[in-house]
Amino acid sequence: MKLERTDDGARTVLRIKGELDSITAPEVRATFDEVVESETKQVELDLSALRVIDSSGVGAIVSLFKRMRAYGGKLEVSGVSGQPLSIFKVLNLIKVLGIQ
Amino acid sequence: MPGIDGLELVKQARERFPLVPVVLMTAHGSEETAVEALGAGAASYVPKRRLATELSDTIESVLMVARGARDERRAYELLDGGELRHVLGPEAADVTALVRYFQRLLERIAAWDHPEVLQIGVALREALINAVEHGNLELDSALKDEGRYDELRAEREYTPPYKDRRVGVVTRIGPEKLTWVITDEGAGFTPDAVPDPTDPLNLDREWGRGLLLIRTFMDDVVFNGTGNEITMTKRRDVTPRDKRAAR
Image (cartoon, rainbow over all chains, first blue to last red; front, side):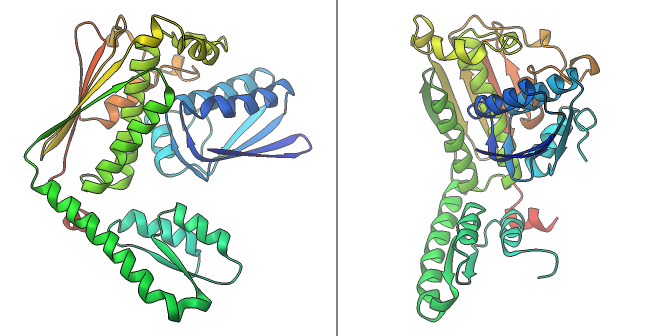
């Protein structure tokens, strides 16, 4: 798993590549914590290079979404396809996370 | 190729025609693309300037590997039954290693298409994580809400009695189905008491989705009375792969 972060003023883009699972979720959680602690208003989570996700990975993303919502921030999840898309569909999270 | 680059072509070719090996021709300075293409499933690549001297040898070695894979699948068709037994400790790396091992096995015997192998891998991973972390290490998912889950997991991995508990995995391979029986040494749980994660009230919870994924991606899922043993079955589509692709 690889996580790339780009900050552009009040907006942050996080790009996750590879596999987001129970092993790698704690790694992204650390960056998610930084975003929440700095109360970044707008975050794009680019999942176009994400190959596989499991329930721990989904949990980390839902946690980010929930914590950002608590301080009025907006999380945009983009580029979801393949296996991750089918997981978000099964878990009924397409609408909640605003996945296009 | 209008609307598609070489990398995307490799990805789509691997998904739609997994038995066809892909060899990439790369221009000077596109080594990074070649590495990405290998990661996406290309079998090999040949720099354009060395095409005349290296293409023939490259294709020959790629075909040799492809023939070996075909022989493995053919041998699987002859299989009447078999059983594998694995024992896992508390290390997370054991789970990853075993899931990847099974995914490779499934890919090699071509019992399922690549996207389905990924989903079977997710179901296996969820079941193994449940057994190791919630069963043997007795970690409650609610600890995630408090941010203490990872810390306690690391601690219990080296603390008795948790560190000494094992997870047994028995895999029965048959011509028409695969069955995994995963047993932990924890106290067990009541599967019916797990809240539905797709209920609107539970959608923004951070945990509690693993069991639904297991039930979705396996054909049959049964727990023992204690809840510390899960039996998962995946039936095989016995239609030959080329006919499946044509459907």
